[in-house]
Image (cartoon, rainbow, N blue to C red):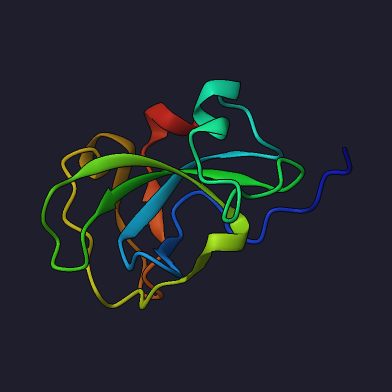
Length: 112
């Protein structure tokens, strides 16, 4: 498999192209790194290729409800409006706040 450079970075706000949920990237896998069972559970007609970056997200529905952790392929993500805050309880554990451009700033405990 060939690896691609990740389009999004830790602290970026993203949105799922199809399902509309939003999230903050807290980890990046350069290629698929989940179980085969998880990958096979995705319907074949929409199953993403494994040779692309996958992102771990602190995710919420478009109305900021139902926080959860998501694992999403790069092909299914677009940049979210950084001015729309994402209200997820995990964000405070990993990020110290936001910069003026909306980028979430990792805590020292995450960087070290």
